[in-house]
Image (tube, rainbow, N blue to C red; front, side):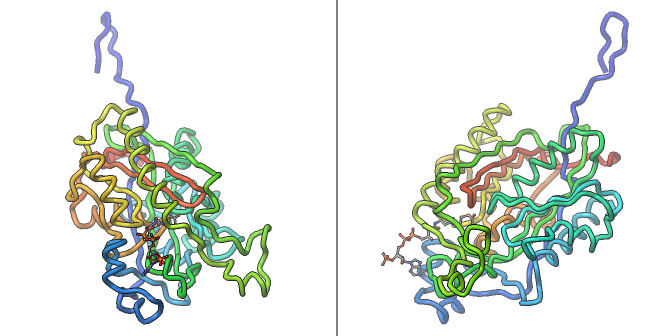
Length: 346
Ligand code: ACO
């Protein structure tokens, strides 16, 4: 409170979008590097040396993106102390929706019983969660929206060609969910940054199944319904953009690399993560490296990591958290957060 010329003024605290609760869902089945050795011409040594990945989770044939999203959403709701009826909007960031339409977000809305709230999918490849988080943050500026479910989910195994050693060793399945709401304290989203470079779209794509090349016998025979990737191009882009995003976010908010308590880069390859850590001088103990256990779960990587780190007590109230992601598009983006939530407001 401030006293100016005898008038008592309440300090105006700007609204900050806060993560009120976070959850995740992972399939039980573990696919090891040894198993991949029996499927393609690869070796456990190669995979570990070039990617750092030890194993990944693979969804059962009956599990769709909406199933994992639903489970993750329930955990996030429980941890936020809210119920589905408290939600005003649902956004699902995914490149592997249950089907082209209806949206996975509408399927999740129905299963949660969050009747009539708007729901839509957002496609930004591996940047899907960050894009969805930023869109939700903008919705929260409106008085009509108070609590938003944001999901990052991908069942990458459905669009992988398990005879292509360049891609099949990298990906896994999972879902993470966050309830984003309004906060009035110091914690919450401090800054966000989004971008895209469409000229690099061909380096990471799934060419078949859309209006350009709809499903046909030929499209299936040519493997167009699977991920096509130029690994070296993506590698170069990823190492550069992860540092760019981080510099922009920290610079705009007046922080330095040494202020970061938890660096959460996109989990695609340990070499990309290590290159960013080296350039930013952020030590491994302050960096999420869940790619080792889960591989690249695309849009799910960041929320799953946040959920597990909070569960394990590695993410504490007041921590400065830096998110940086990139993916198909080529899209990229990040967010800077002060971890924690108001106890009394939602
Ligand atoms: N096992 C054995 N050998 C392999 C394998 C494998 N699984 N995969 C590729 N190789 C071979 C290649 O065929 C190549 O052989 P060649 O020289 O005879 O042609 C050799 O290994 C070297 O290939 P490089 O591409 O140079 O290997 P690199 O060290 O770059 O690692 C990798 C490849 C792991 C794909 C790396 O480039 C990478 O991680 N890139 C980034 C990928 C990424 O981040 N993708 C996700 C993007 S986010 C999203 O939206 C999905």
